[in-house]
Figure 1 (cartoon, rainbow, N blue to C red):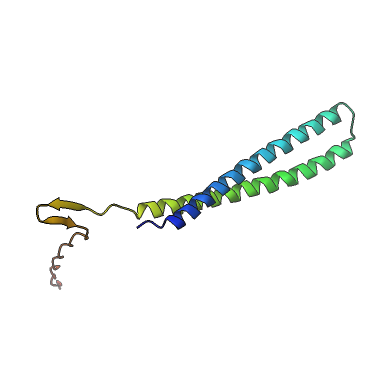
Figure 2 (figure 1 turned 90 degrees about the horizontal axis):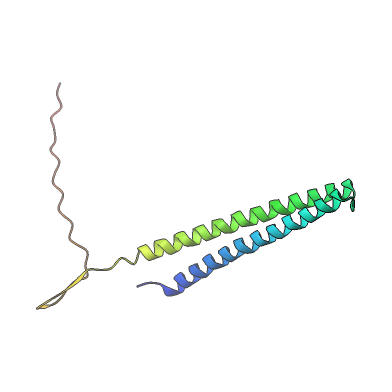
Length: 124
């Protein structure tokens, strides 16, 4: 039987990780737009080069943090997807067949007996 609670939890974890990736990407785009505005302000002489340098440093640190979080959440989503796939794969159908005498099947097929290996004499 399928463990529905485990599967629902895994699916929720996958969705949360995906949403966090999207949210961080939007945050990153907002940061890039904000920095672009700063660059234009510098170009038109509204702020000093020193202020722009400070903004560059802060922006790079924030971009690095966001990229790290995006990668981390991508990894979480990948792991949750793998768990879901393995859980689904374990749900292979059991073969049953209806006959005149009732239902047949439900057990694993009997394995074939292995033959004995021939022992070869060592040559001298």
